[in-house]
Image 1 (tube, rainbow, N blue to C red):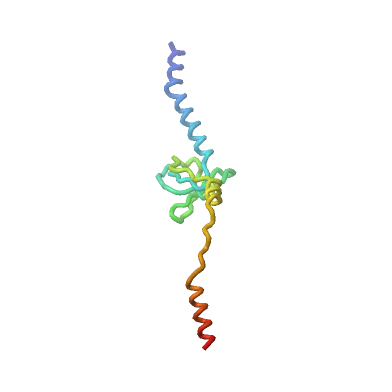
Image 2 (cartoon, rainbow, N blue to C red):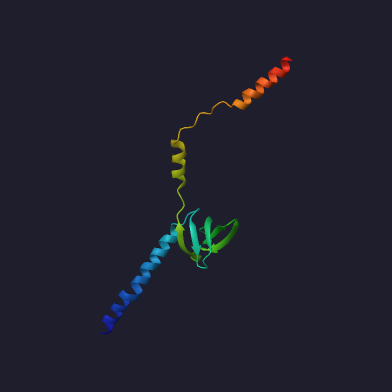
Length: 117
C-alpha cells in the first residue's frame, strides 16, 4: 500500500514539477537579444545583453538598463525577429532608381542666368 502511495505521489506531484522545470530551462536557454520579457517582479523590458558566465541578463526598460539574474525572467512575451530574416528581406527588394531633382536644375539655371548678366 505504501509503494502505491509513493507511485501516486510521484505521478501527481513530482513528475509535473519536473516537466515544468524542464520547460523553464528550455525557455531560458532560448533567450536572445531583442526578446520582450517580463520579470518575476512584473517589469516589462527588452533583452539588451545576456551574460552566460555570470548568469545575468540586461534589460532595456524605456532607455533604462537594468541587470537581473537569469532566474528573474518569468516569461517571454515576444521573440525577437532573426537578423538573417531582415537581411534577406532587404536584399530581395530592388533598389529604387533616383529621379533627378528639379530643385537642383532650377538653381543651376538661376545661377547661370545671373552669371550671364
